[in-house]
Length: 277
Image (cartoon, rainbow, N blue to C red; front, side, top):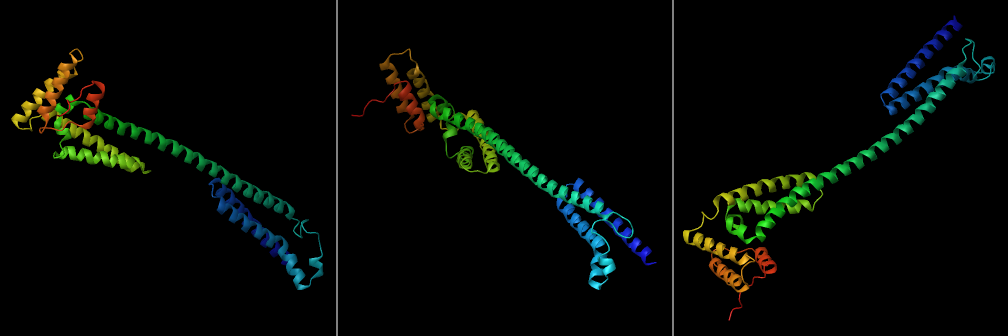
């Protein structure tokens, strides 16, 4: 009866170990390496208890027949070769440790690759945003350096116009966001800038000089004709300089020509105002 009970207990223990090993396999397949290692530890502890427990208990109880009856690892009264179970558990534990280390290295390489991919994507995204930003800056710069464009769209330089004010604020916000590291904030700033520029430019093109008093509109129209004469390279220097001086006199007190436009006129077309006496 005792041998039968011992055999049943060992069979139950073996079934439990088999279930644990199955759970280890499932956890490993799901890449739950921490859980797999934990189950391996339990399986190892269970095999030790099942294999060495009876002999250890006999030694503690003082039963020399049980404690000295055989060589560890060769088997027991049931004839089951427990060294096979130990070998399987050893291989499984080694595979678990190696697999965990390998999984860690793979995940680390993957994280590094993902990090490099994100960095490359962020760089490309920033380049695209800066390109859009520069297009608006260049368009506004061309307007501010072309006196004829300025006279056709004076509202775009009118700081009392709400659309112009919104555009100028958007310009400052985009420039500030460009110096930062938050790409989402920069994207929002560039998007707002493009919208503000389109609104201000279209309004300035449509309104022209209609928002100005009639006398100022007439002065701008006459000054524009004189500036076209001054910019015509086919004319003589005296005629061009005289036309430029008259145009500036007409515009004085009506609109203020941007500094970029004045510098462009004087540097490229060699136009200067006569010295005051």
